[in-house]
Length: 212
Image (cartoon, rainbow, N blue to C red; front, side):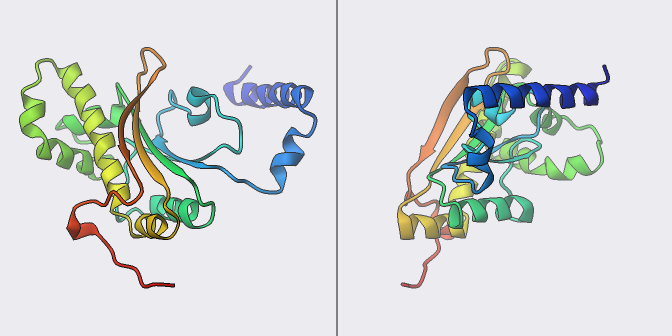
C-alpha cells in the first residue's frame, strides 16, 4: 500500500477507535477549541507533539518549524503566539527541542544549503554567545546536545521578550513559559527551564502598557 493511502486507511481505523471509546468525541470538539497549552516544536517528523505527550486533539495548540525557533521577525510564529495568548488565553507555552536535531547539526556546520542557512543563522548566533562553554565540551555529539539545550533556553527568553506575552502577564498573570528537550533515543522529555509570569527579561526588552 502506498504511504499516502496508508494514512487514509489509518485515519478510518483511528476514527473508529475514538468513536468506540466515546461516541461524541468529534461532535464535542467540532464547535470550539479550548487548549491550555501552546506547543512550539521542531518540524522533525520524529517529534509529533500529541504523540510524545499522550495528548488528545484539542489539548495542544501547535506551531512547528525547523529547530523550534522563536524569531521576532517571523510573523507566522508571532501570529500563532498572539492568537494563543490573546484569543485562546493559554496558561502555558512550551518550547520543545530535541536531541539529534538536524537543524542544530546543520547550524554547527559550514556547508551551503541555500535558504535554510539564513534561517539557521539564528542558531549560529546562539553558538557564538556560548562559544566558550561549547568549545570546551569534548565530543561533537555532546556538544550538539548542549547546543540543542541552549537553543531551547534562548527561545524561551525570546518568548519573554514578546510584547503581547508581557501584556498577558500584566493583565491575567499568564502564561507560564517552559523549555523542554525530547530525547530521541529514550522517548523521554526533559524539563530545562521555566519562566514564571512577570519574570521579565533584560530591561531593554520590557514594555510598559497603558492601564485599561
